[in-house]
Image (tube, rainbow, N blue to C red; front, side):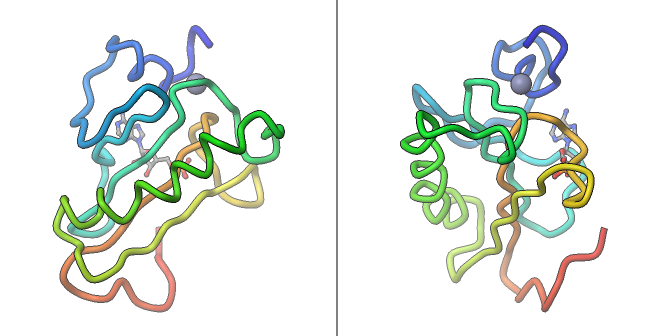
Length: 115
Ligand code: AMP
Ligand code: ZN
């Protein structure tokens, strides 16, 4: 996807504070952190949203969940974190490339995140 912001980060055309990378995933710090730890985990392959996911995405999306705890711990949230995937207009998705927010820190994030 030529103009997709997160595809451009994957291609290195826009800088990002990367915290994890493998063949299929990239994780980088959110540019407007809502908590002391706020990382976005994305598939390198463009998938617009969870509403566009297909069975072939299952392994990569599964891996997103599995790597989250280590990323959170490495970034300073060793006692848990919140993971959020916003989808579509109703979900409040702003960037149309699937991304999982990992938010946390030393203190509990509370019952719900305000934006
Ligand atoms: P969402 O509302 O779930 O689509 O969240 C999009 C997130 O992307 C927001 O938390 C933004 O702060 C974040 N964001 C937007 N542009 C960038 C960027 N260039 N680098 C890192 N995070 C970004
Ligand atoms: Zn993309």
